[in-house]
Length: 405
Image 1 (cartoon, rainbow, N blue to C red):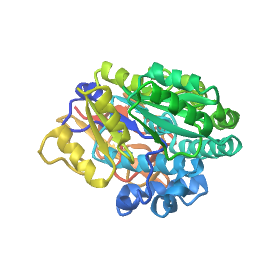
Image 2: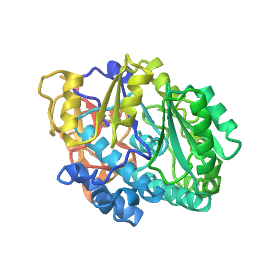
Image 3: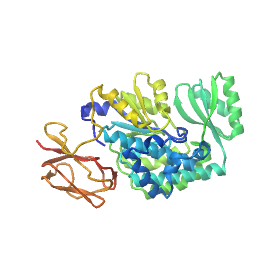
Image 4: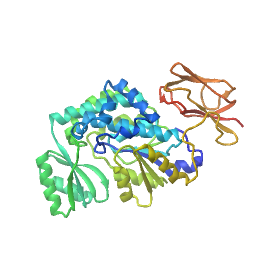
């Protein structure tokens, strides 16, 4: 990812955060607006990795089919990555990232903590594991509106059964999950405590509760096979609402997340406290943007769901002045800073010398994308690498900054 040309680097890192939705944000046909967009090619690549026709899920699956965890998770994850790719193509990069439940995996993939291939594999395995757990111990989820956190917890306790708080989403909105009968009793108790409304969610299990314990070992095995990197920018975790910047934190955080409440309200407050003034939700639904307006009203929240939303986002961030829709080879970003971009789509593998501070001549080799060579059109020193080894890149995606001064 690369900073927007018209936004100063220091200001960008304190103002912009990317957020990614989870299960429940999906809807039939959500991929249709993206079919002719260059970012759609990620769907074909992900289908090869997952061994599934993800395009069919995004274009043809009905609401009941999308509700199944094995379908919901992969479809929502990939839809968000398509939107992310479109936003990256215009040169935007966050200073922080976070994702709600499944969206945490999208955030980790977006920030390079997971490779594209590992992200697809883990999300596929997570969906299958959670489907297995949901089939073994059927459950559901209900959003309680107009209730505080303590009363939601008390309502679950009064149910005297398998009912737990699953999501602390926003002030006055808490999601509970568990066995259907126990949730009915919890909702009745919550009504006695003065809730405004109880709303069943379109999900296929009691997620973020002990009902998901059966999926935990399978997820741990999938995580153990992946290579986790330090994220390019810190990612705020669901478990504790804190920003984490080290690869070693994430295997245990993701394992615990499966059976623990999502502390989304706390996560958004953490981002606001860190100086974020614009939260950009990338993916279907727009749910997180709505929550953000309730959690931190002074922070701007923007939802990007369809291609036209990318232009609207740029207008919001940069005013009405025209902004290039893609990076052009040889474009000057300042008098001395220039970019090397990818000549093709595929997996990027750098040469050993492609590190920050290395001098590069005109035509210097920085690496390969598939069979294509990545060569610099300029001379200078590498001031920063923008693609990681093993990362999937697209045509025109920035690979490195060069200081030509």
